[in-house]
Image (tube, rainbow, N blue to C red; front, side, top):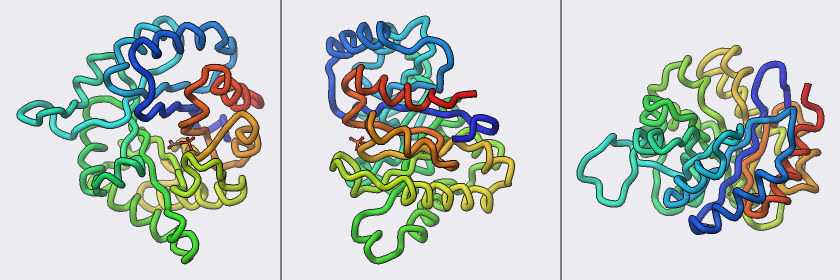
Length: 258
Ligand code: PGA
């Protein structure tokens, strides 16, 4: 983390978990145990159907609500899709884009690029996910793969807009598996991501970009991961479903807040 230049962001990714009723229950408990005082930026990304309950439950707190996906068009004949302006109107501030679980369902970098542009246009903060598979790691192409994802996802995005994107490094082999990248492995890739952003924009933008780690982050390993200079927060799946477990990670991020 580097509090001088960029925000520390701790974001939950609930995936396809929790009903609106369970969102209210989580919200009541989370509010009760939320650390006071020095806070990192906290985001709860949840299923679209839970967003109204989430927004209501977190009213008058500094907790932001995020979506897990969106469509790039603003409105029209796209049955089942949700647009960026709809999310904004519902009180959403962040949106996860390009999660590996969505890429596995067929989302391409070209799709993600269009979504990023639409999200920025609407005033949302995108959390762009990139990461390599186990095969890619084993064959030594991790850096090349991530460079390619960033180049394609960032196409035609102006440098001043790039600054508003949060990037999450999520090695696919570490997601939901209990296998966490070591702090050194995660740092190496996050540092590489910052270098790519510097080349695509400027040193100033690269320095100001929050880069998160995601993949089996929990209350026990968060502090070590967050102690790395280029890891500015976390995107948390499993451990974000329980308010107490999630607060443990927030406490780890608040630890050395200045
Ligand atoms: P996990 O998920 O924390 O359950 O590994 C992270 C993610 O997919 O964002």
